[in-house]
Length: 310
Length: 124
Length: 121
View 1 (cartoon, rainbow over the protein chains, first blue to last red):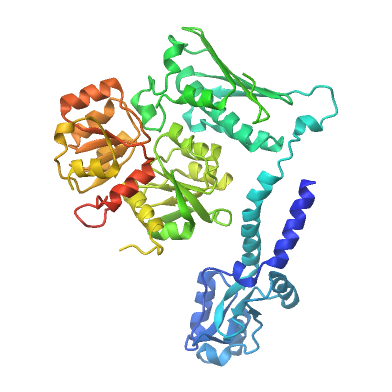
View 2: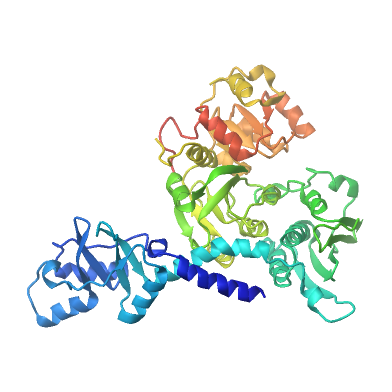
């Protein structure tokens, strides 16, 4: 259902968008006095195949790589582009829909078209094939965000499975002190939860809680494991390490309490908000720890952001 | 954070901050509605608008990860800082735009704040 | 502009250093990284940060900053407050988020530039 909606949107956009919505932001034009000998380097430097010759805002002609090659082969003297340019310029009006641009690209096989204002006849820009794609993608993004929110149907992967009960277990291991990879697991989890079709708010809470727990594992716990067990109603996250353990659990739950060394603070961590953030993002949070043995943090989050499992 | 009365285009922000573009996945991220500034991960984790810009002095990979967790669209580093290649790659994979301004966080925020207050984006 | 004027105009709460608010300030600095503050802040700067731990007083003292302003209504830690008292560094608190507070300070004329020139890279 979701894919069909997306395809319709693209079709609508293709008809709705006008050429100026897509046109290139930086335009290379030539003056009539530009010399043919300069053309090659201008085209090459800007990675374009042709450039219009513009004077007084009017397009006088167009010079392409082919024109340059023909001039070279003919062995003519150096002259200004005005003498060698193509006068038969194919252009697009700025009020034409993007579909016309696409058709023109197909029909003529050119790489770019100048855009002309229909009323004044003035040159207003250039559109290339790449610009068409970028314009579409940009427009899609504006709608994509709305699609994301509006297409959340309440039906996740778990509802789609034909079974009395469905569970999914994701296991990750985390290396201690390997701060380069801090957050990798939360990142993977985020993509997975997105794939499973969970509500954006649930995904956000789950990844923030996991991220904080993961960083704790790396910075303080000496590494460990993260296990995420999900069913249609609850996400259970269990983060375990065999590190030094927490002497006073009540203290670490206080916002701002931190034992972070300076190097940790210089990386933006150690504000002592880790467990507070975990608490704010979870329905239940349990910390089991023994000094010298290790720590286990258990988090539960309801899949339905409207419901809570206290 | 501060909500902007009208969204600012990323390219205007780039002008106001005289910023270099380190990574432009720009077709996705054009309009900015909120601006945050912070060097503290736990603070950044409390931000939450996907059309937002983060101004920070932190260039380690976790900045990208943290931004990813809360769907930040673009990050501008201050003091002309530029992150490591691997960090830039991480941002590319998450389609986060990266900018770098030579201004300090204070100066960058001050300029942006004033720009959004006035109609035009030209600063004296 | 005097610190006391800024306190009044922006509704800042004074946590310590009430006696030092007649200082003139013209420049501001914002960062939560001690290394950046040490590298880039200047004497007499008004320092905007979210950090509340003891180190902020040491850094403010070392760089002779005029005061520390905490954002988001953050309160300094007990030890931080005590040290600030001892060192004579005012600590002020604003309920505003960083971007907004900096913006308002900027509008009052507290810029981030050096000596009226463009900041160096």
